[in-house]
Image 1 (cartoon, rainbow, N blue to C red):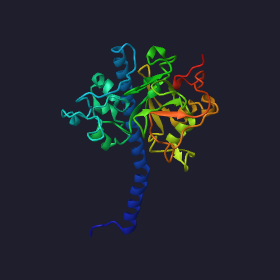
Image 2 (tube, one colour; image 1 turned 180 degrees about the vertical axis):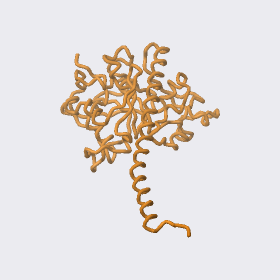
Image 3 (spheres, rainbow, N blue to C red; image 1 turned 90 degrees about the vertical axis):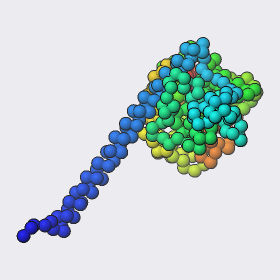
Image 4 (cartoon, rainbow, N blue to C red; image 1 turned 60 degrees about the horizontal axis):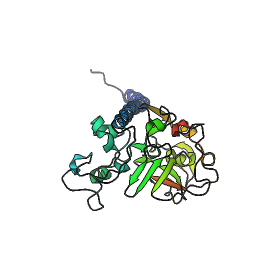
Length: 303
């Protein structure tokens, strides 16, 4: 007579398998996240290096362009001979900061490097405008921004040699809601040519990376959508890259009162203070922020 497993034995085996699965699945998930975080760091470093190569060919200047160039999209499907620079055709051929990847694509020659492995690319923006949203973003306070009839030049002049601490100054970062980290400027600054400063305001970045608690209030819990690995990959102006935990990043960012005493952030900033803009025009306070701070991540160094 063949000996069979009893019901109790089968239940025990199933229970053991369930326990092992409960233990191992989170470990596998963590290993997968760690691998993608490493890949993101490698991507960021190569992008940062691409900027160095670009500047070597452009008199040490960071890219700040506007206008349109036919068939310039990094999404090759949009390069069909139709100029795409309007709401009707999309903005695939725009040369402004929303498609900053065009500046350095000739140097890295790999569009996939611009996509963050832990984030989901916005396919609507990619297919319509050739823009990569929800991935790596440039720091517009360092590069500056330009549109037709309007130029915003960084406070240090817009060349790498103007930075006090390139190895510590953030040029690129990962962001969930925008193509770029915005700059800050006083609402009293006239349009046209203006000098802009980094968005070195902790309250703003808390709203980006911490869970929302209603309105512009935040908890102390990291938002897993904004920071899927618990932090963000940062590319520095010297071509290096580093992963910063969210609290480390916030700790290196001044408060609004330290940076622009007496000022207020603009409203509305979106229902959760995350409205994507290229610029934030603060109201009140001095027309020029306090740039003599010990905040090298933002290019601000005591002088």
